[in-house]
Image 1 (tube, rainbow, N blue to C red):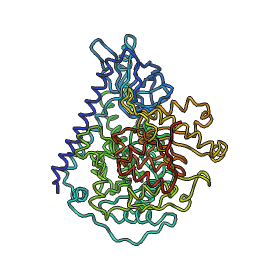
Image 2 (cartoon, rainbow, N blue to C red):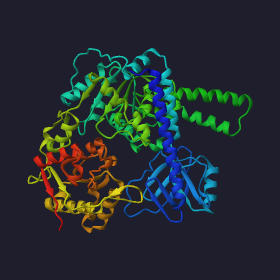
Image 3 (cartoon, rainbow, N blue to C red):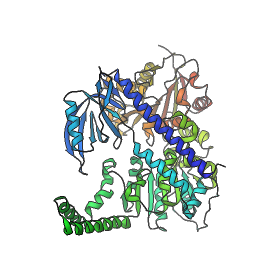
Image 4 (cartoon, rainbow, N blue to C red):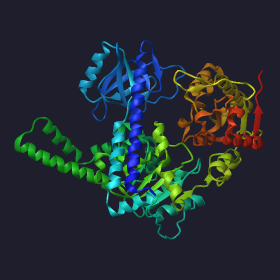
Length: 623
């Protein structure tokens, strides 16, 4: 068993590797662009050239700049997201010159980015540069997150608080978790496994895990567990790896009447969460008007004894408002990194809930765990893992989440949710057998649900006889043009089979999923070229597997792309990714791909056999 010092030292090394990889990839990307700046760059993480639009101020008083760029007709998802850092650059005779300002994305629109700037000087400097050079914008590196993770690991290693040490030892496998014995709780509106999960949460003294496979109501269960915990505790901390995940569970709690205080940049929150943000509640506090007047007097030049008195009162009011906001909140919510914000210093919580824990880097989890006596994790380690860019860091274990480790160490702390409410039972069955030991059951209302009574829930269109060709595009992503055309043709045929009128009347929706951005880009382009789909475009979503995490559609078409004689399937070997893809469909799953290439891997061989037995397996012939 690894000792504590060695354990955290190794995690620090892995995070350093990940940061180094991000920095190297960023420099490589800029260097590569240096030779391409005579033309245009349309890349998920870069745009060149861009135009500057309006300058304005956001609600926090920060200066913002509108950055405009042309949108390709077949534009697919961008890496630019609210909260992410970006830098502006321009070409020189010696390559690329970066402007020395760290900016952050606030809003992403169609051909528009709104970015916040450090100050007025930066805004003027950027405009002056734009008068003489064409500018580009490139996704940057979030150094703050890496700093927070390193600091959290240092503190977690050396912290000697007795309660924390006990929790740390359990999470590291050095001590068994303990549980209290409590009377059986009853929630008639939940199924048995959901009730068992909540029972285990309230009985756990250090750690409990709610393992929620696709469609099993993991968020519903976690919300009920939080509410039940609040019957016993004054306040809890709720975190997740992303702002979107924090907002989602916070919104569910608000709808149940729970007072939530949302920590983080309001510009990265959903509209529904803004009223719960720390900043909005701060400015709505009854004492804020006095504080504002004091700050105005100090800004206008109050001096001497008056300034001293005002500063003292300013500090008193800041402490009072901050204390009131936290005392009123039953739930404090933030991202894992956001739990280390300055206003969270010295805050302590009896219980920490981490949603989507299977997508969280372990070092980020420790930032929040430092503030808690016990931790409850919800997620599914059989779905998408956290993104790790460094191959060395991934091989070293950075892709292994804390949830994954605790599941392996302490199965007695885990409750598997076994009733799923999304999929037809035939769609569910293979995933259940492969990933969940056959323990999933389809709820009665979902088990036999189909688009049409003459339809089947499963279909594989095997392209083995067609010898399609996979190609790498300019963005170093694979695509398969013939298979993309087959996707379009298949979707049209299926809609005709069930009738466009039925699609409209029953509001049937469709998802087209592919592991590769290049293929998603190509399929989107082909869809736009077809007049047939124009009336249906709001019912059809095209995206990568990662983009579909957490989503579902009535009908899912998966384009697997890989088609070669060597059986090389690349990152389709990441079976967790495929688990996400095949479990998005409620009523119909159509897989399109070369079964001969894919069946060299036993997962795809098993999936093909399952569809042969329970659906339609069609060998597509050349025409």
